[in-house]
Image 1 (cartoon, rainbow, N blue to C red):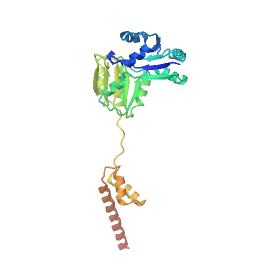
Image 2: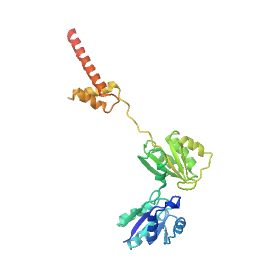
Image 3: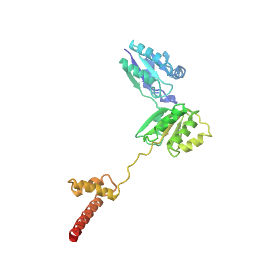
Image 4: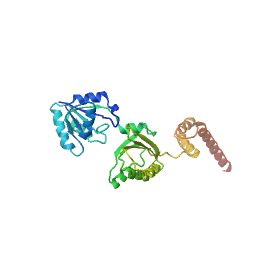
Length: 290
């Protein structure tokens, strides 16, 4: 049984092609490519001569089974996309699924990724993010997709083609609000690489009158997390009093409530003492009146 190698290719600058990726493509028996014409140019540049198999979203079922059978018979295969990492918004994910079902070993040869590269220079949060890929060309589906993400606090990553960008930005501004931050990363690693950091409203307005050029990665600020309303001192006191009534010492109750409120332990403790003193005074007055 052979092995399937998932090989990342340059997203623009050929110097980003790793020595390991080159050696892998030279060693396999055949290469499954999204567009054989694009891959042939890459292979020729690095003097790689291997049989190519066309493998894309329109023939992935038929060709996928053929590739699996060849690997089961002992051949090694490499899977590449036109640019970047296969299997990310790419039919390569299907061949990995088939390989897993058949018990075939898969090995990843990491390479450039437009999504991660754009995220790194976006100027937006990179701690938590969600890759959303390409939006639907259907207006209704596209708007429903965006609406489902309105409250998502992750930084959002989209791919977009230039001819669709103006409409997409208009829909994003309506869904997320015009003030939401966006970084538009164009032609990553290529001669005309550009990063524009602005708001959705300004981006939609600009590209409504200026024709976009090149492939875009859109990095959009996540929604602001909802915060619970701050406790008032009366709320903090009531919570502390309940803890005391359940057997907790006043100092410990004040400390516990202070940990999740804007009030200091001393403030809550003082309020507890004052409330207790007031209760004693009210009781004494009531007994006197009796």
